[in-house]
Image 1 (tube, helix red, strand yellow):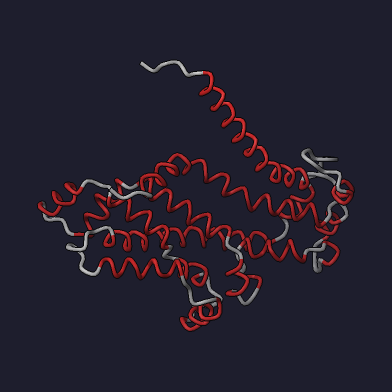
Image 2: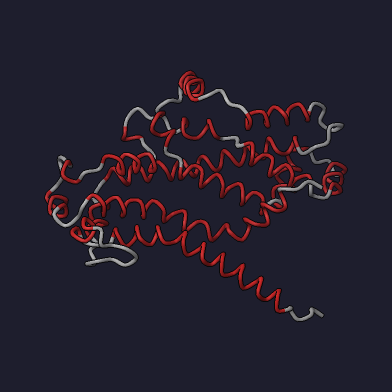
Length: 297
């Protein structure tokens, strides 16, 4: 039977909930302001009157964005990058984490390999050698340049290998007795039992690929191949609605009802929305995957 909470414990819990609630509200305020700005009229946005509620409700910024093929081209590139990048990264992470989770007597040289991976967290060759290596492989200016260089994230490998080490060793021994090899053990035993850790790794990888913008700027030779975040970076820095050229009459009419601030806000909100929609489906695995994969038994 659980005893009643003392007054001090209740006060402590109330204080914790209050502080966490306050931080949650503060983290949401910029997002709410951006949404309000995207839904406000041109004059209110230009005058800085928009706070947490739209002023002069106006959907023309979203209409304008939906008519810009550049946005949806970049959006499609990012979707392809996330899907391919996450699948390849999960496969590569599994193939690295599984052997490194074994003891040294089962995998001689395991410690040396593990430290070789950890070394890459502490030191790197720098931006120029990284770029020259990608260029030498011949994948520059292709979607593979956005996927392959970051396919193996060492932090994710460490997270997954520690999770593997916490699984009962009897399962693997029984599988060997039944004639299974390492490939079958990995994909038929370890993978089904590692759903929380794999969901955590997938979430990290999805967010990394979706939010990455710098590599698109330097690895793509033309703006037509930019992923969404690289495209938005150019929008936020350079966009001026008065400089648009070769637009159709519908877009020209919308330009009179919008400003560069409302268009930027609309595009940023639309770019943020997919992550907000994906996260709730993976959130239930997130904390369990972090906790179970962060310690070694």
